[in-house]
Length: 339
Image (cartoon, rainbow, N blue to C red):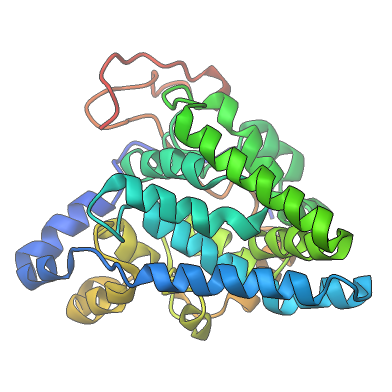
């Protein structure tokens, strides 16, 4: 086995725009799936209520019970809330952008860390410039990939502290406004909620919410979702879907190729894309178990944080000389605003 020392560099554009055009040529009826799903707000309210009630019920319980409940129940609720924030980021609930943003802030409340508004900014760039290191926050930092590489203990630490590693990526993204009134509102709501829970219900209650948050995105089979989406687990296919039973509690977030191809279609209609255009999706490699992928990522030394496609072409504008593969040398050389 040869340890990967760098990302996989591609001179091709990301695959989704081309596939979208081809699918719509053969299946124009898919356009009818595009739209909003305002009923998603009730899922948000229910999940937020569930987490708040759980925190209240665990306020006087042992820490073992608190952590167990966070791993077995809270993590699933928080992960579902991430999917709801994702829907709000794509404005798939309401026509008015402000209402989607407020819904995202509500979904963010039990997750303790204020992230919904910032996520919207970074995630839209991920769709527009997939694989462009200066614009795609989903890609690891070079130092991050070198530090963790393909080591078991490194991968454990990376998953456990995944939200912290994500925050460190912000400094390399130059086209995103780091702070404004909406982000301030997001922070104020979170601070008020955390302060209230801590003051009135105590450390076990807030501990449950914090543990639920970290488990939902990290050292948990649910954490395999981040590996499933874009890590190279089958040749150099760039994006993967997951068609497993956990989609039922994760609002179909596993349909990731479908989502990237049609980001304006809400979560409840994603399976219909695959059904209508099965000849496009059934020929792509896909995952059927997050749990299996979770353990494969931890133990398989062929998979590292360098197992990602990186490109220097942001569309019509080149970011760097393609003869220089070192991402540390990538310098922004564009004046055109991101679409």
